Image (tube, rainbow, N blue to C red; front, side):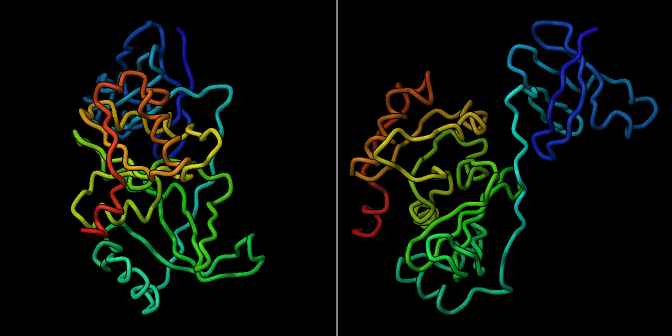
Length: 262
């Protein structure tokens, strides 16, 4: 018998699964079988695909992926938040037409964080990155528009859970643009985690989010009309990230401009 090591997408716990066939390998679930009733413990509710390296249990919804040699264990951040939004924060977002309802919906928080650009602690906005309801990363922004993310934490799309099971998806290049889209009713919007740059963009995060796009029928690219934004948009448009996607990706006018001029 051949076994492979897989990693739970939620807990990142490792399991050994049977991998004798090149395609699907039905078997009992490594995560829930021991906790099921005696008559159900040996039921093959889990299947692992040796080609894709992905597995799923139809009983407990355990999802996993193959552990590779270059697997990296990511840091899990802790949620940093004050009990309630400060008046200053609320006013700052209101000037940008973002309501507290949207902030709460998107689980934006505020805190005090040491920022390397200023070399001191600063009041910061916390854009919290969730996947399947679990906090994966945090981007901190201070009043001077300095940014940082949690060191060694995993990078994914911002608002990734917002596009789950959606047929249309909007991609923007910043958390503020994403908040604006959600404010306008476009909950199916994600933001790239590292903005756009003039040099080649690091898009490794997409590999970790690909499953959210498998059933998507249309993707709208809403990046800035400057050199970095055009470069990021063109990367998606040409299919460098989504190799089968050019026929259903569209370029849009920058969403934030349309809303504010609207």
